[in-house]
Structures are given as C-alpha cells and as structure tokens.
Length: 88
Image 1 (cartoon, rainbow, N blue to C red):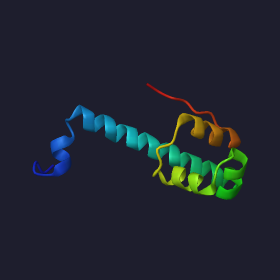
Image 2 (image 1 turned 90 degrees about the vertical axis):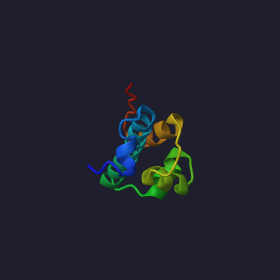
Image 3 (image 1 turned 135 degrees about the horizontal axis):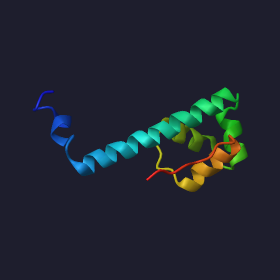
C-alpha cells in the first residue's frame, strides 16, 4: 500500500475507522431494505404509503444518502416484516 495514499494515513486512526464502520453499516441496511422490497415486489411508492412517509424518503434511505432515525427504519422494517437489530 502506498504510504502517500490519503486512506493509508487514516486507516490506523480510531475515529476514522469508527466513522467508516458506521457508514458501511448504514449502506448495508440501505441495500438490505432495497433488496427485500424488490423481492416482495413492492414499489417505493407502496412502501412509503404503508410506512406513512414520502416516496422520496424511501429513495434516500435505499441510496444510503439519508441520516435516518431508528424510528424511521423501524417503520420501514415493520412494513417489510423485518426486525431491526442494533449491535454494539
């Protein structure tokens, strides 16, 4: 690995590693929601309506570009018959 690489400099930094882990977890949740929704043949519009939120919010959740609360994730998960599990 190139020691002049930006990421190399930060890979040992605890704060950076924690932030990177959190971002990966959010992206994983987003991908899982999109996958389950598609597998159940539910559109974003249908999911949003059942969860009581705008379709644009579902799109932001699935793209990983949204700071989403546990409450919001739980509403979406309930519609998809999923359970949110928070690991520490």
